[in-house]
Length: 231
Length: 226
Image (cartoon, rainbow over all chains, first blue to last red; front, side):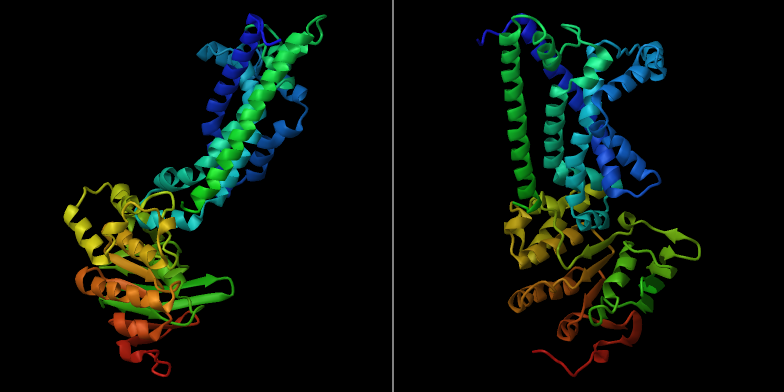
C-alpha cells in the first residue's frame, strides 16, 4: 500500500514547493497588511479588509477564473509581467503558487493581525520615549511580541495553500510535473479506473501534512501567550 | 528650565495649565483625575496641546501657534511609567540597553556602572521582567530611562502600583537619583508625604488648572501621612 510511485512523489514535492513559495512570499505582505489593519486608520480600510477576505467567501472557481483573466497570458497584468519581467504564471507552477498564496492570504493575515492587536500599545509608547523611530518600534517591540502569531499564520496559510484545489485547477489546470498538486492528482486518480489505491495514499499524505500544520499552529499559539506574559 | 503653557480639551475635561520650573524635582501634585498624566504626556510629546507652548532649556518642543512639534523620540525626555512598561520579551540587560541602541550611542561603561549601582539592579541583568517583583521592575524602568541619557526625567506615580512596604524600598533610590544623577525631574503624585521627601518645587493641579505654585510649603498639611 505504501509504495509511493514517482508520479505521486512528483505531486507531493510540487505541492510542498508551491505551498512553501506561496507562504514565504505572502508572509511579508501579510505582515504589512495585518499591521495596517491593526494599527492604522485610513481611508479605504474597510475596503482593504474586504478584499483581503474575499478569497475566503468567493467560490474558488471564481477566484481562479479572475486570476486567469488578470494574470493569464492575455490578461492585463499577466501580459505586462511576461513582456517586462519574463514572469509567466499561466499553466506554470508559479501560477499555482500565486493562486495558493491568494487563497491562503486571509488565513495568514488573521492570526498576525490578532497578535499585533494584542501587543500593548503602551510598550510602543515607551519605546518611542526611549528614542525609537516608528520602524524601530515595529522591528524591536511589535514584531517580536507578535512573532508567535506570525508563525501561526504561516502554518495556517501553508496548510491552506497545500490543500488548495479549485482556484489552482481553474487558473493553471492539472499538468503532471508542472501544476499537478496533491489535490489535483487525487482528483485525476479517482476518475481513473484502478486509481483508488494511489488516491488513498495521497489522501493519507495530505492528512499527515494537515495534522502536522494544526499541531504546529497550536504549539505556536501557546508560545504566544507565554511570551506576552513575559516568561 | 521647563516651561509649560498649554490647553487641551479631552472630551468633557479641559486642561489649562501654565508654569515654569527651574527646580531639580518639580512635583506635579493633585488628586487623581486632576490632569497630571495628561500634562506630562504633553511634555513627553505623547499628547499634543491644542494651544500653547512646551519648552525646555529654551528649546521649543511644542508651539501650537507655529505648528511646531518635536516627535516623542527626538525629545530626549525619559519617562518612567506607573506600570513600568518593561519589554517582556527582553531580559533586564537588553531593556536597560534599549535607549542606547535606538539612539546609536556608544557604550558608556562608566554610566552603566553608575546607574546599575545607584539602583542596585546589577544582579537582575539576566532576568526577564516577568520574573521581577514590582519594586525591582520600577528600579529597572528608572535605569532604562536614565541610560537613554535624557535631559529631563518624567516620573508618573512610579510608586503608585506598589504597596507601602515597597514604596519605602524605592523612595531612597529616588532621593539618591535626585541628589546624584543631575537630571531634572518632573514627579507626579497624589501623595503629599512623597512630595515632601522628593520635590523641590510644587505645581498644584486641580481639575486641569494650576491652583498653586511654590515650595513644598504649598502642600496641604491636613493629611500628613507618617
